[in-house]
Figure 1 (cartoon, rainbow, N blue to C red):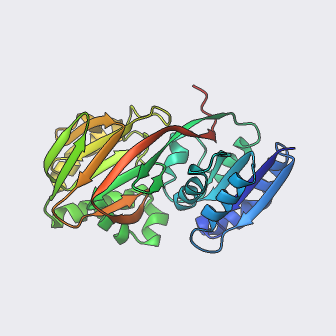
Figure 2: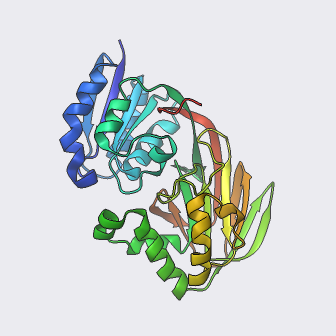
Length: 296
């Protein structure tokens, strides 16, 4: 007897969750004896459903939605003694974790992967009492995300964030940051700090080229300066996976980092606003298992 809970955000991806629910349920029924389908109606529903699956000793829980839905599901199982294997059917705009796991971004293809995909370990991150699956950003990125309209997300995807980011950098001065880790300390000004778990950030799959989903590391990028022309100079390195080599960027890896500021700076976790500094960020190595076509 094997059980899986399929958690669907019906509003994700132009209501693709509703459209593909039957296919997902049928595909999972070929692998599991019992398929429990749940539709979210409000914020934190996915977290509560996932927690129920963990406490109920389900073998797996599949998140069908955008990055926000996946984040909620991870939050629901992260603190449980029994943590079901995670499955992902990406329906959002960026889908960074799916990209890092080589899960197809087309819903039907991602569903078919679940029929026989092996499982592998997955790191997740924790900031104070909250969890994240991909990236923490501090500084102007929060403003950039808030300025991206639904229409821009649909038509431009990750490029929309880059465009709004350029506008923000053009109009603002860098912020004072105090960063402390065993490997490095930094006390200076930066317009943007990125702490990533995977290689894919904002849809750019080669952002942190050396990052692996189970390497037990936080990949930290401190942007020293990034005005409009600095960004244009850095863009080729971003696209080719060499952003860590850019003159405008300090890069290092660690397992835990504390960030503070003299100013009230916003934190952005997995694309959503998540409070303000100070914050302590740590990696939980191989804390979950996830269905993924990656086998290396």
